[in-house]
Length: 426
Image: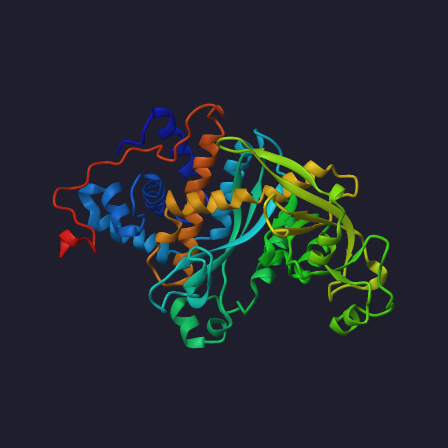
C-alpha cells in the first residue's frame, strides 16, 4: 500500500500507533489502521465494503469482516480515542495560535429507512427541510486557523428514547434518557470544563443560542458566549431594567414588564450613526464585510432572577440593501471589547461549517451504513481521528502552499471488483 511520501507514512503510522494504545486489545491495531486509511483515501464512498477493497485488495472479503466487527461490535472506548486524538493534534493546532472558541452545533444525516438508531422525521439542515434523518450534537474547539471536534453524541428523539424494544435492538445504553439538543450541548461543555480543555468563547447559532437555559448554564460555568438569537427575543434597552423583584422572571412576569422590547424593535429604533461597516476575515477573493450595530441590553428571559441581571451586548447585522436586520447575537464578552473583535468572534462560527463539510465530503462522516448506537459513534470517532490527522498535517504546511485532503494514493482494486449497489454488479 502506498501512503504517499515516506514522511507522511511515518507520521501516520506513529499517529495510528498512538490511537491503538487506548483500544484495549493489540489485535485492534490492524483494523484501526485499515479503517483510518480507508477514510483518508480518495473515493466517493467511505462505507466499510469499498474501504475494505481499497485497503486490502488481495483479501477484501476478510478485511470487510474485520472492519465491520471493529466499527460495529468491538467495545473500545470512543472517549479514550477522542482524548488521544486531542493529545496528538492539539499541539499542532496551537502552534498556529491559541484556542479562541468552543463551537456548539449539530449536523444531520438523511436516511431513507426508519430502523437506524435515532432516525426521525425532523429538521435536516443538509436538506433544509423536515425529513427522515439522524442528528448528532458536537462541540469543537477552534483557533483562528483550525478547529477539531472534541465531543460527539447522537440526538435521540423522545419517541426513540421511550421505545424500549427499539432501544434494545439498536444497543442504546440503558442509562441514557431523553435530552434536548441544548441539554446535550451543555453536558458536553460541562465535560470539557471538567476535562480541563483550553477555554474559549462559546459560539452557537440561533438553534442553541435562543435557549436561555443553555446561556445561563454557560455563564454558571464561567464561560463567555456569542449566541445567535431570534429577533423576537425580549430585552431592556440600556438604562431600563426589571420592575418586578424577588421572583424569577417567568412568562407572566415578562408580560408585567412594560419596558421590554424585542431585539428587532430595538434594532430598528437605533440611529443611523449606530451602524458601522466592519470587515472580519479575508475571503477567497476579498475581505468579508457587512454593516453592524451593537448596544448594551438586559435580557428578559424566563430564567432571570431580576436582582442578578447583568448587561450583555446585543450585536445586530444589517447588510446594505436588505430591508431589515438579518442576524442577531447576544454576548457576555466584556463591555470594553473592540467592535471588530466582537464581530470577528461571532463570525468565527463558520469554522464548524468547514469541519462538517470536510468530515462529510472528504472523510465519509455520513457514509456509515450500520444501524446501531455503538457503530454510529465508533464511525464518527474514527472520522474525527482521520480528520485530526489531516488537521495536524495541514498545520505543517505554509499558508501559501496548496492544501489537499488527498494525502494518500489509492491502491489498485482487484480485477472484477464491483461494490454492492453498482449497476455493473447486477
